[in-house]
Image (tube, rainbow, N blue to C red; front, side, top):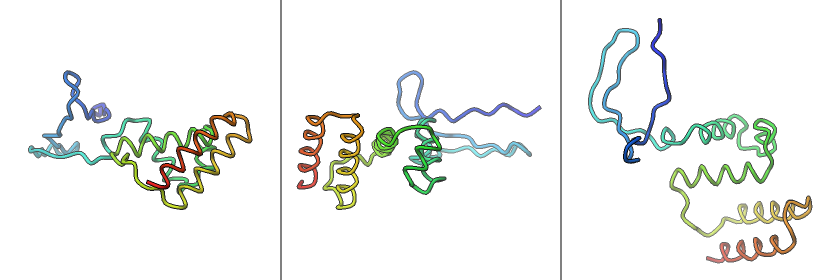
Length: 135
């Protein structure tokens, strides 16, 4: 009977600090290697973020396809992508690239058009976008 396999836990259940892998073992022959092994940043993502990232890659970053694949809306896709970017530590506020600025403006106008945000919220988001574009 095969040994059950569980996702690798990346944080200590007691203190919350990162855990380190110290043993690797071959399931077939039992050969084991002990030492201190680092997990890459992707392996430290929570399961829901990994599922999102797999969908993102499977759909080659095409947001419309990700929406269909996961059954979520455009703003939810963007929010989840932002979450993954933050979880990977790329959350520094940098000046937006022109393509990012255009995409964010389009998103705000689309949300305003379909009624998911008010004109006041859209104006606030546009002002914030202008600040980020100039920094």
